[in-house]
Length: 503
Image (cartoon, rainbow, N blue to C red; front, side, top):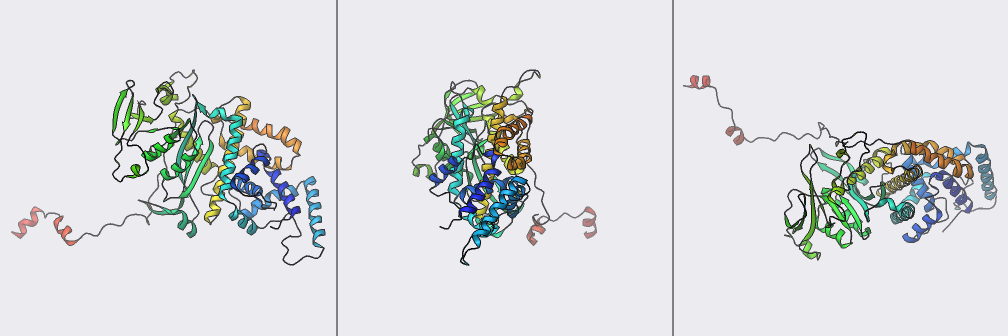
């Protein structure tokens, strides 16, 4: 494979300057580990895998800019600095000297080693395997757990949350054909992709995710993610994931689950543990024989924990953590609204209510970062590349928030993601043009201090209602045509005056 060492060195230098905020996380060792596990080589070209990761993160950070602008914005910032401009001038002169010799017209090397075309970037991005992105997220997660893994545990369980969402994509025929479109009472909508993610709710750090067409169900994607669970993992699920096969898949991994009880499920009580707790056995109807073919037992034993919040209907949590001594009912259902004294410190919410943290993560990724509404690509593979860049960027920003919280003794969930994202964007040019010593010793600690200043107040009981879609004239249902027999049957009776005239 053809490589250009001069251009490769130039773009590696540009990449290392532009991601200085994440230099402690995106190390060469992490990138090399991800490439080794994915079975690919990092490469030695200007658009090698390491540089494509940087460009994917940069595209997620600057959603309003085109790919062409992203490729040149960092270079322009360096050219405007006196010291960097001198270094770039030397590199360009080296490229011109190299071109003076006899070169074939098919030689891909250019005179200017600082130039990379958008077409070359698009081709290189399509050849980048998704397995490398997944392995990179795994490697970053392992590095995070080595430093701050204790934050993810509660009474010996590693707590995760799982939920799905839909991502609106640009209107394009190729995306419609691959991902599909939503069909509902409002008519056909724009193309959408389905995403299911596993997340650590105590830090909102992504763990794994799956991206698929909307025709693929959330439970199917959840079954794939369950393969990554470890023993003693506790997964908090939405009620929409109520599936006998999914629950047994989690239990077969020697992991645990918790989700809200559905109203139409019939359970047989085995033992009463208290006024609001009981051990039950669920034996679902297997009319199609799906669970029997999968080799699953006929029933599963679970623990039901009932509770009621004032002003709301009675609810129940179902979990396979059968022992009340492992996680008590109070630990499951406690709410910050239980504290009535305003001068007293608010208690942390119950474990099951931490499931809502993944909803906040989806909001931060889709709205704050712009993962929904600012995607540019028109090819399914490129869409997957952009979304992977958003997930990695969100992971890295959350990592900075955790470091800022640890440095100042705060809860990571009390720091604003929106303000942290803004502080990162404001310091980008300073980190890019600073010397390595000034960036590592002064700017990065200052960035953490600024992130720690933006604390979110505790707001118990706050909720975010879903957006209501308004019907348009094009999507309104047309009135049904009534037959002559229907009109005669439902005809209005004549008035008494009319009958009198007929008589």
